[in-house]
Image (cartoon, rainbow, N blue to C red; front, side, top):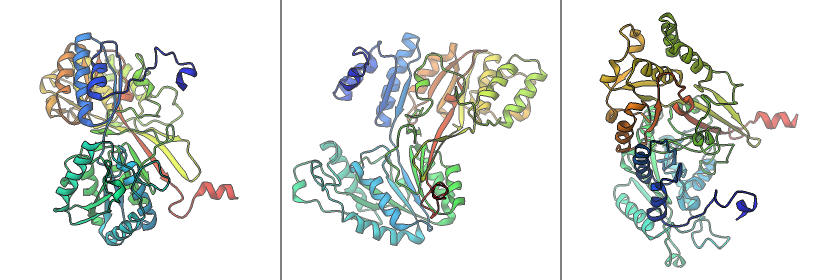
Length: 483
């Protein structure tokens, strides 16, 4: 009603409350719906994607899907962290809103040197939490959304408590008997693989790690396929940098909690099984809903760009051969968001940046040599690796440089780990349907042609980094104000 009063036409904004199976399914399947923005589970996002893929093939149109889905969100805590701050941030990250946030903390990774002390402090702090009806000011944690969620969570707790290395839960007051309450619970697990899916509620899993296993831990977190939020508690800059550079996660928080992203300050959204991008509150969000969006970041041209060495080698070869792709490749080099970092606004004592990183493999499928070279140029311009079926790779010119040939991964659609596919029009219907049937991360399919611009901003992952600059004991911005 407020938005209607502000001037948005009633025909442009509707509110249809109801279950996803009824209202959502009907809307997604309707030919009048030309774009879908969804927040929910990865499984439901896949159902929506399959429906839209069928419609896209039948109606011959691109129907944008922006899906923000779940996460197996972790917080990595090393021995230099301040345990009191860690415990406070863990409580809010894991148990606020009864853990029913897609950004909520699911796995607390503690360096074994400080694990016992931190766990003991966490158990003690949990005793101060009050569970009850949310209309009372004294309540910290309310019920979960419904009886089905309560049953699923309790089943997980009952199954895991017998396998857990340690187990701790709060006792519910008698007043919680009539309602869908789940007691905040901490389970210590032996390995991240013990968790098969996201546990959406007030259940925290603790995992110990050795200092020299930090790299393996990050690889395991990446290996879950989720990439929504990650917390880091450390006062060692090298450790923080090591984790940030290696983690494939959309939102990383340093020395603070991992919930409560602010629009325009911490653009929010994940990658892999955690979402398609672009980020809500970020510069690319509206571009995904436009029919003709700019090649790169649009007005954000003040940031120094880096040209990947692979694209430079490609351009040298293309110019020497006198190919048309050389001119388009130069445009890609100029407009690519590869490794661009933007400084975002935020409160004093906090530093927020948004950077653009390669997605990894970009699947390429073309029917012509020029079309394939266009796809490869765009892929290399964004620091990604081209992946294609062997039959498509045969379209490469005989004189294609050996060093670039070595970068190309030859594989079928069902075998690639790509989240983005570049497909020429003649192959679009086949690949759109094939990719939609795959489980796991949603693969966005972009239609390309021989000489048309490919939207480079769709080939990069957005990484938002939020740093609490006061946590390490000094804050340059505060000291500058004081002087």
